[in-house]
Amino acid sequence: MGALLNPSILSADFANLERDLGKIAGADYAHVDVMDYHFVPNLTIGLPVVERLVQVCPVPIDTHLMIEDPDRWAPGFAEAGAASVTFHAEAAQAPVRLARELRRLGARAGLAIRPATPVEPFLDLLDEIDMLLVMTVEPGFGGQSFIEGTLAKIRRARAAVDESGLDVWIQVDGGVSRTTIERIADAGANVFVAGSAVYGADDVAAEIDVLRGLADGAAHHH
Ligand code: DX5
Ligand code: ZN
Image (cartoon, rainbow, N blue to C red):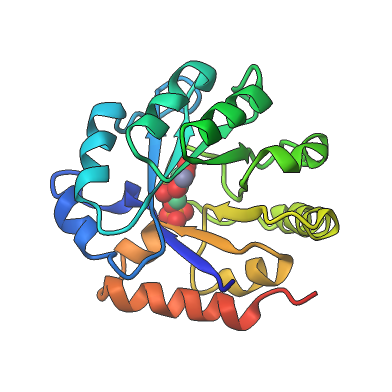
């Protein structure tokens, strides 16, 4: 499978979300960041808006829940039709129970970790998830610079996934751009979230292809 490129609508125009989703019809998924003012110091959109985005989006929706108590709130996003629901390990009380519930509801289950959260405690649970999201900035805002120290964690995650033989995707989110994406792909990520790099481009559709092409060209070979 080639690299997947998921633009983050956090950098879209929140007064024109349907229009801006239309610009990313050539992407693999639309990445939707849900923030609650508690897990992160920012607030975005909630379930009622995501329910409508699912209905108008030209590509499947990849939700990234930066919220407290995902055990309680995440299943609703799967029920709303999000193709992928990612919750944070730091916020979940029972990540395996929640991942199983998300899968039961028909969504891909994603587990996210902040830059300072070690990946090792989760490597024995890869069978329970469809995607591991290694945050490459502190979650909460778009437009931050990539944290170089996360590359080693991506490499360790890739080695563990390959050793497991499981088809678990490794997503990266934060500071992904033309200048960083090749090194991140070489480290072993295969799903790339990009907000400001995509929506800040003059030609959004072309930028998706450029970024995906750079990732494919640099993809980790094993
Ligand atoms: C940040 C969000 C990201 C954000 C990335 O907490 O999870 O998805 O949109 O923005 P860029 O690509 O601009 O770093
Ligand atoms: Zn995100």
